[in-house]
Image 1 (cartoon, rainbow, N blue to C red):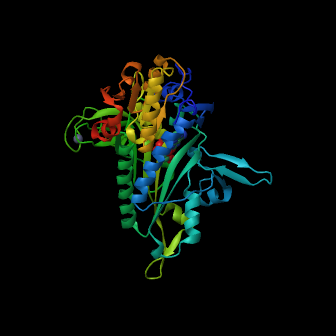
Image 2 (image 1 turned 120 degrees about the horizontal axis):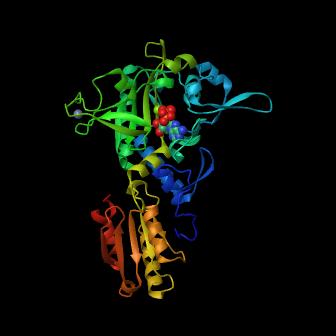
Image 3 (image 1 turned 120 degrees about the vertical axis):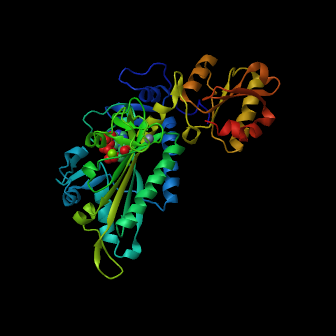
Length: 426
Ligand SMILES: Nc1ncnc2c1ncn2[C@@H]1O[C@H](COP(=O)(O)OP(=O)(O)OP(=O)(O)O)[C@@H](O)[C@H]1O
Ligand SMILES: [Mg+2]
Ligand SMILES: [Zn+2]
């Protein structure tokens, strides 16, 4: 992609409403723009990152047998009355009325719709287990939307719903999802702690949260840096021996307090919704049973914020390669120099042909601005084409994270980039 053709409106100073680093950097790097409080436009660069996260999620969930579908955001009131959640304050539901006076909700979550589908379509134990998921916009009328994509009114969530014949099978689904989540966050370049959680408004039995450790996190967790044990606020409140300085219950090391961003949560729901919504099936003996359910969420857009909180320096974002909007940035220092332009076009062509995602900074702006923007938008590898070295067909490769830099002959570029050192290193 040529920078001049796409739309990456970088700015030097973040608007004053941005309080935390990820929000500032997303605005400055031209990834997002605000429409009004808690409502954001995802610009081309931001959307590329979101799509990468989504595709990592798809890959890991499909491996676990997940089936992707897509459910409506606008949902009739009757369904929510059936589950008993029409008046659930804590969900922040926004309700609307149509011209005929019928009431709807802009869904904050989708248990009602999926359970109703299963009620209508699934009859027998032979049809189970099923694990459905979608990547869909959610609406929550947050009282204090803040921190950019971290706490928005409209955001993208991946939500999965498991339907099993019994608790044992549901337990397997639960652990499979926990494993998938660990892989997803790892591939996104995010360091997370899994903590036991309170099921809250979702109801049901067991729940765990995935917390991205970061100073700006709104959740407090107590954890052990040695063995990875972690507990959230509620668990800490229940057990006075789990607090900062006390020995870790698993290994004895002193516990530490950290802040975490909740990027995902998994729930074992039992039969709460299958009961209220009537999702039953016939078992092998012909007896009617209720589906045992689980629901599993990941905040896709919040994950992007959390990744930036954990991956940046004073100059800008440092994308983990797996979710970077582009893998390589080509930066010609002087676009009026003919040999540089030749080398630039050749390099661009070659990298595109080898299947790499490349951004070419062909803008007619000062080199200083290009270098600043390169660090700001954080593409893992930068290929600089300088006037002097271009004469002898040499480019510079620089690693955004480590700062490591080498010269490379244009002919050897693909081979060099194919090696471990330059493509995979964080
Ligand atoms: N307002 C929001 N903006 C962006 N992402 C959100 C928002 N609310 C929830 N999420 C994401 O969706 C995931 C699943 O939703 P869940 O119902 O568990 O959220 P939640 O526990 O209400 O979140 P929180 O406690 O932060 O309000 C969360 O783990 C989080 O990553
Ligand atoms: Mg949650
Ligand atoms: Zn420990």
